Image 1 (cartoon, rainbow, N blue to C red):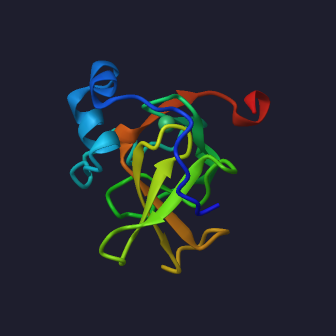
Image 2: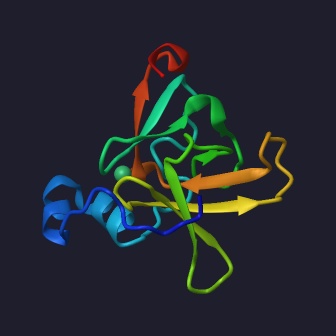
Length: 140
Ligand SMILES: [Zn+2]
């Protein structure tokens, strides 16, 4: 699960910059971070699915999103196998990426004491995902 094997979807920087907005490119491909509290989905709690903004792979269900108050969308669990984890070079944080295209999503934190089933917080940039409204249980 924590393996950093090559992503199935491989594109050049040029190809990515053609399909992503400059902000999406900065965050998904260059591991940037959107400004705290500014994300489109920070306070969104409607029913639906969050797909990868780079390759449209489903990553998170709205039912796993919670209000962490941290300033970015927070989820306690992704779709099985949809998300890769790897330690940051500084060894302090764990980066999360889309398993399909390698796009940077944010970081995962454990044991912060949130009242969620996994005791994990996936801190995700709104820019890295695309919300698809709908009934989660009928479509998956
Ligand atoms: Zn992706």
